[in-house]
Length: 76
Image 1: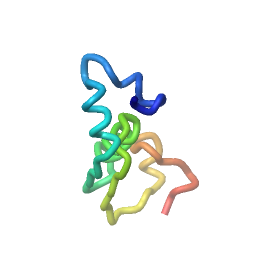
Image 2 (image 1 turned 180 degrees about the vertical axis):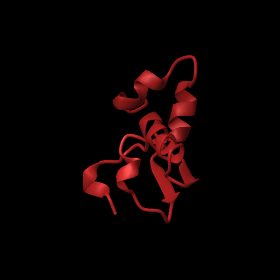
Image 3 (image 1 turned 90 degrees about the vertical axis):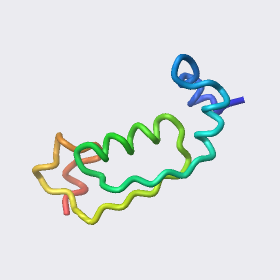
Image 4 (image 1 turned 120 degrees about the vertical axis):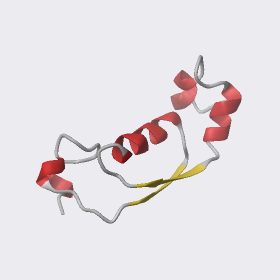
């Protein structure tokens, strides 16, 4: 049985078997910018248990509203 918080994923896009596989996967994402930040958010929401992210940039005030996870507390 899939964890209850991920059961809503099962349907047209994912079978229960697919969901169980995601719960065991490790995925690496290079870049947490405008697109990468949303990809990371989506991967976490669909149940990827381990996500490795490489990004040597830092958040600036320009990122507020453009990148997922951006807020004034993470600037710099």
